[in-house]
Structure formats: C-alpha cells, structure tokens
Figure (cartoon, rainbow, N blue to C red):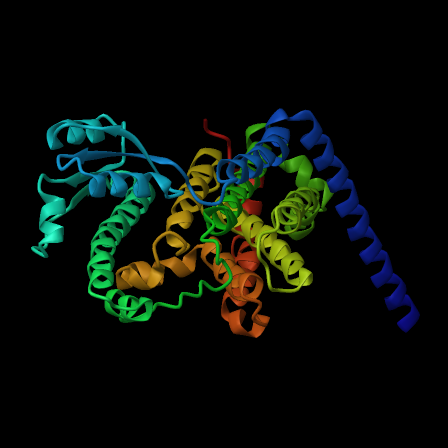
Length: 402
C-alpha cells in the first residue's frame, strides 16, 4: 500500500515538473516572438544602467557656471573671484556690471548663482567695519543651487579670514594664535561609507533598482494581460491541468531567470567594475537581487489580480513604481515626511530594498538588523497567493476589452 502511494506521489510530482517545463518552453517562445519583451527586459534595462552610471561618472558635478558682480574692483575682490573660480564645483563664466543683469542671467538659465561685492568692501574690511558680501543662487535645480551656494558662502568666509589673518600678523601674532582666533573650533569631518560625497554612489544605487522594478512590474502585468488579449489563457491553463500555481510558476520562471541575469550584471558592474563601496558579503548582494526580482514579480502579479485588465493593471504598476522612487527615502528622508506618508512608505518594495541595501550592503551590518524589511519583501513575493483564484477566474471567463 505504501509503495503504491509513493509511486503515485512520484508520478504526480513528475507530472507537475513536466507541466512546468512545457509552460516554460511556451513562455520562452513568446519571449522570442514578441519584441516588447526583448526591449523591456534586456535593451532598456542595460541602457538605463549605462545611462545613469555614465551621467554621474565624475561623482560630483563640477564647473557649474556662476558669475560675479564686482563693484569694488580691488586686488582683494579680484582675489575672491579667482578663489571662487578655483573651486571644483564652480566656474566663473561671466562678470556683470550690475545685479539686475546677473539676475536676468539666472532667469535665462545661463548661470546658477552670482557673488555680489559692493563698492567699498575692501576699505570696510581694512577698517573692521563688517562689509556685506551678498550671493544669490537659484534653487530651481536643487543640487546645483546648493552646491554653488556652498562655494560662495565659503568664499565669503575666506575673504574675511584673509583680512583678519593679515591684521593679526601685522600685530605680531604667531601662526597658532592666528589660527585659534580665526577658527576657534576645528571641525573633524568623517563621511562614513561615502567619503567622496559621490552622487553616483547614492543616486544610481536607488534609481537603477527602482527603474528595474518598474520594468518587472510592467512586464509581469503585461504577460498576464496578453493571455486575455490574444485569447490564449484557456490553452495556458489546460497545459497546467487547471492548476493556477503551476501555470504561474512555468510562466514567470523564465522571466525571473532573465531578470536575475540583468540584476546580477548590474551589481557586478557597479560594485566590482566601477568600485562602488560595499561592506557586505557578496552573498548578501545575491540574496538582495533574488528578493528584488521575486518581490517585484509578486507585486506585478498581485496588481493584475486586483484589476484583471491589461490597461488598468499596467497603470497601477507604473504609478506604484514611480511613486516608490520618492517614497524610498533616498532623496527625502522618510522620517521627515508626514505620519500618513511614513506609514504608506511600507507599501513600496523599493523602500525595503533600499533599507536592506543601506544596512547590509553599504554599511555591512548583519541581516538581522534589517529583518523586518526582509520579511516585507518576502510578503510582497507571496502576494499572488491572495489573488490566485481571481486570476484563474479572469483567465477562464473574462473577455478582453481594449
């Protein structure tokens, strides 16, 4: 009796494996015949990876155009202009005779900011009468505006420090006394994990995975929606003997393998070829890539199950993926958002991916430090269980409506 049951179980298992294999072969044929899959699964992801890493190849934007309005026109004011031009992030491209002309240049997007040195600045400095040096910058482009603001603020501080240094030395002060007077507190800055302030390191590592998740969302919903569109859903289910789990496994396993190849290729390119800092184990990168692909496919299938329509499910997926880039917390910290938005951020897979990456890859902490985010990605991976019956019902009874 036991031998008969064992033989029956083995037979059922082999049948399921054969069904999954046949559906996988069918899916590979679909992937080969439909150009959209080649574009969205290979060409566009590779383009996105190369585009973002090449766009910020220098790490930090450099030689941002700024201008100077120098009405003082002395050796001291010209020295400030040369020092501003010597900074890596700023380049003095023009000198205007008035503030109004420099302001119009900012409005025409010719410069990101300008330094205004009024007449009599040097005389007031030498007389210790605290002259005012103004700087104006645009925050229309937040990163560029903040960078040129930092340089111009530093120049203003250096100008007063240079005059102070000359006056103290003239009075016979030693170098140590001069330094103590000009800089009472010395700042010892340590930028952990990204000491270069490299924009490529912290922007590419969230933008590229976010866009890859967008492609995975869309392809997952598209591949299910086209079964209805081309009236092939019943044949697909027949190959699995009506077992929706077998049908989904066979359909999405080839896609998962392709996505994993893209994700692992991206990880090798940025962490080993470009040398992005990573303190975690290589196996952590492998685990994070697997969870990224599985959670993204799970959400895409779930989106179609909620709204079994090609157009509506793809709209939901694209909206959720675009919002996730803002809700991940890389550009604007989640803790600074309103309480409802902080709660909403847990519903985006990219948020959990980003938190695991920060803790376990960027800073090298053990996985236990980010276990809740790992569990959240596992929950996204299991979301299709909630809509399996609805997807099966849609494949058997729904009629495609353009």
